[in-house]
Length: 87
Image 1 (cartoon, helix red, strand yellow):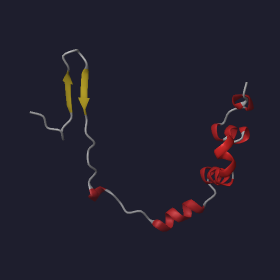
Image 2 (tube, one colour):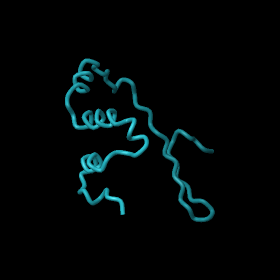
Image 3 (cartoon, rainbow, N blue to C red):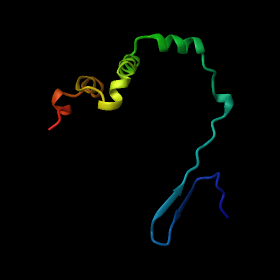
C-alpha cells in the first residue's frame, strides 16, 4: 500500500529506478516575518540588478523588436564583444 507523503523508491519491471520524494512542509514556527521597511531600503539602494532592470525598462519599447544591444549583453553576461557579433 502506497503512502504518498513518504519518500518511495521502486524498481520497475524494465529495470528503471523510480523515486518519489514529496516536498516537506516548512513549519510556520520556524519562519520569521518580513520587515517591509528594510525591504524598501534594499530596493532603493543602487544594486547592480536594479540598475540593469532600470536600463531594460528604459529600452522596453525598442527591446521588444530588436532585443538588447550588444553592449548591454556584454555587461549582463560578462563576455567580450565578439560573443554577440552576428556572422
